[in-house]
Image 1 (cartoon, rainbow, N blue to C red):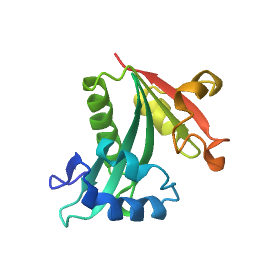
Image 2 (cartoon, helix red, strand yellow):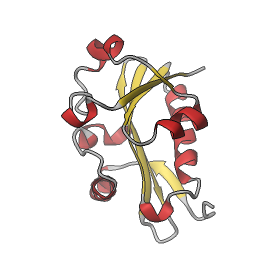
Image 3 (cartoon, helix red, strand yellow):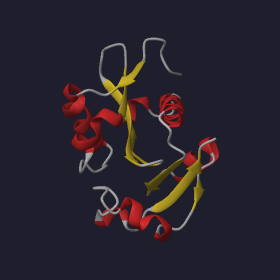
Image 4 (cartoon, rainbow, N blue to C red):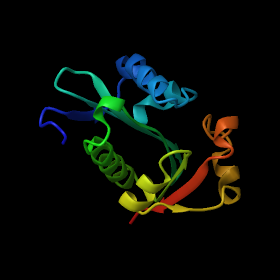
Length: 150
């Protein structure tokens, strides 16, 4: 279970070292994180350790969800779901109409918990071509999913 002392907040520049450390721990790329850190949320536990993060890259009314990570010690506590709910609510309030993501390991999590559906990358190529994550070789074989926000 999530502790009552877990705090979710917008990331600030001073969170970057902790963000990079968590992303390294869970084998996610760093490319583009610093450029988009103002569109990240972080979760910290009662000891002020960063235990989860998620970010968005905005492309008009489309956003690429990226770097959704939970520290190994905090997995299966519900913090990932809570953080995703905060992210999606934030995206909707910011005028985002559609959220897409690339994943190699969490297809079922996004599909079952948040109703993301698999879709073709080709239709999004022009809109996401400038994304640092979109062009990474390791992401070329990832499952591509989308969620239409209401």
